[in-house]
Length: 502
Image (cartoon, rainbow, N blue to C red; front, side):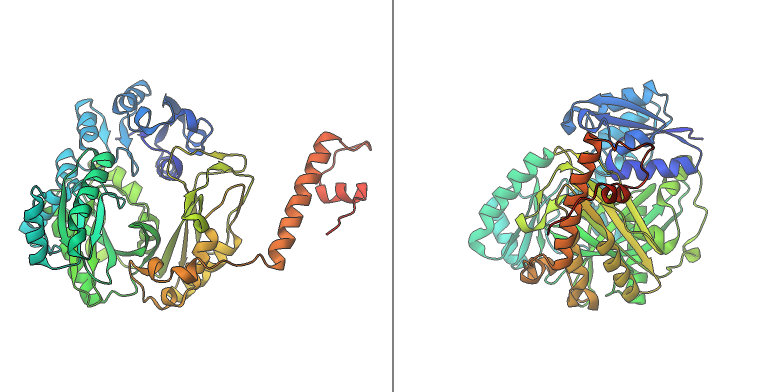
């Protein structure tokens, strides 16, 4: 059985995996770059190994250094988290060669489903509905024009490798076809080292709905229902919820069966996600498979009551699934908001810097998966996500209200964040009614990005924060002359009889 896990990642996902390891009595090993010497995952782990400079290619993407760290600490297994090497077939194969358990699917499944073109071919053969389009790379541009005319505009030009919205171009008019193909190829080559692109019919008013699946090494495979991931910016998810507000029991059953068949088609083992695009009439099509844990997995855990990381580790330990499809039920409603160190009013520019103060929301139905703390400096080299805020309630309406309260309570100073923007999303009538799709942010941009003046409460808080910072510096520079140690700063301010002028 696995006794020690090296987590080949950083940030909140590294901490989240380590928490489950601790609950299971498994020791954890952190790896870190120069930029992450003081990071939370380094402080939380039982052991930590430095693996290189700040750039990812010299640290978190360096397979040799991670394997060496696992050997050095005698780790039995490696958990890749998400991002970095989590869907790298070479890494999974290298782990196997070195006798280290890779907590995830095998290289064949990663290769087959990681390449969107090969995945489309596989799903088509397995009877899973796919979006109309090509199942081969675009080699001839003139042939591509002919194919697009057959499919009908609008279409998406999509990179075969990678994800995150890179190498994707929406084409609405014929004169944009060639430029879209060339720019998508160029971006895909730079991002993934693979410039292959293909054509898909663009689904109008699309919903992005995905199904969480689990499969063991004994042929057992099941789904843990769906997640609605349609609040997106540049094809990146911002808010997720479950159950989906547009789903019906009949369509849920059908899509769940297709998700399981998709996983079985590649003899999948571990946790994975089958992503679908769904139109307003609930026609659905396979989009892609993520052969790893998803960022939004906590909302599944909260509604279904299953620790997905624990299940990943059990599967890697060659244990069968301990439950059947009919054992799984959904209870209540859960929403996740991704909190980024970004400036929404400045085209979401990253906002790295020093965290001066942080107050996390608390109370019934709250979960915060994060990694920052007061005094921590968010590095500029990595993804700017600070945390994931997850709420649960008995129904959707209550969950939205709870998330609004949680966002109100969440206070971070020192860097700009997306918290206020997310408050506007929660307050928007279209979101509250569940009548939104992947064009939501674009469609309601004027309302979501509307400037607003700081109200009196905001001004008061700014004055108080500035005053407290100023007084703290005074106390540190000149301790009180009376005997004893002060236990309360407010008492200190009173004793000094300092006047506040507003």
